[in-house]
Length: 468
Image (cartoon, rainbow, N blue to C red; front, side):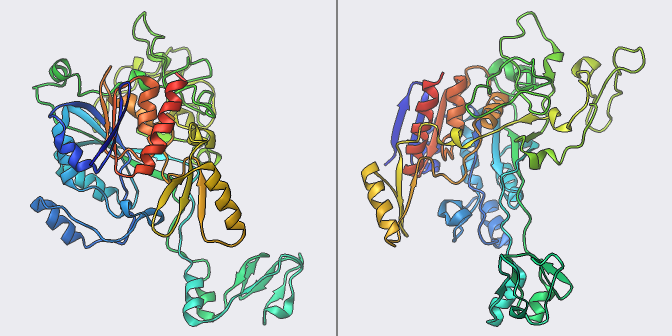
């Protein structure tokens, strides 16, 4: 039995998404912006997966995914995307996040749902934590040998046979390698040989599927006039060129600073009543970043794509035969000095304050079986019990593991949704898409099967509705 919560033009449905989607009217939403499960579990038998998908059957994958969550065991199958296809208006876009590990599955599933892939967006961020299996340590564990940890103070040479103390008096040199204080020395020769080897890289990119339901009319122009869908709102999502660029739909989020020579910002909705002005901002790209120092290191200093040549006003670029014409010179902006090339791309920042906004009064107790909401008094009581050694995990506020930046979701929603268009998120999660819609005024329908996530979503959406 689904539970429905409504506030103005915002609707949250606490239920399995497939059943809700099957009841929705055909051609009833204008865009779909969602962060679905990534399926970061054990690699499936791909012949079995594709066999089910091609036969139109549901594939059920056993196991748990990200952080042991059962809902992340596998990517959504074509049966869900087919329903999304049915209720999306012709020409309507779908935006779906995916992991670099399972992007191929997500994209194939969406294709089999009937959509045509239009692009792949990349979101670069600096907050990812490496999840790599230490092969050397695993070899020692398999051999039953215990490693010796280098003391943080002056190393004791005799603790590690055959090892020499470095001149600094704080490092250990063993088998041609140097080990710093606090690090464990491999115990076996095999482990020493494979020391430094792992199984994964630091995650710093998530991919985003941008797909579209085929248009029903002969041309995009005709489709837009009939359905209001089919295009991307380029001007609304242009990237700011300097601090003087006016505020936009994604600005004003607490803890964010989206303007400046490095950080991008959106174009002001009402700052162009006199007509089209391409110099307001750069053409939006299929790359977004979070402005973190780790990400900015990826981008070299650059003077820009275009600038004055001697006494000429603007360099006109020749058409590109692969991707089509690059357009007239009016589609580009002159360079503004030099700096990190990151300034050419939209910057979507987030903060702990944004993540927790509206969730200060939420308290949670997690046991081996489930997570449930508790009162503040219970939270304080369990805090005492934890100090006494009881095995209870308590948390406060927004404890959802995969919260997306509100500014990023605002940019995406603004890009693919026509004026007054209705946005659907069949995997609502912590409600970042709903918050984005609440901020810019789009009607929103979010579907989420986890009751705790719905509670977090409602608190966040109400907070941002109060900030309008």
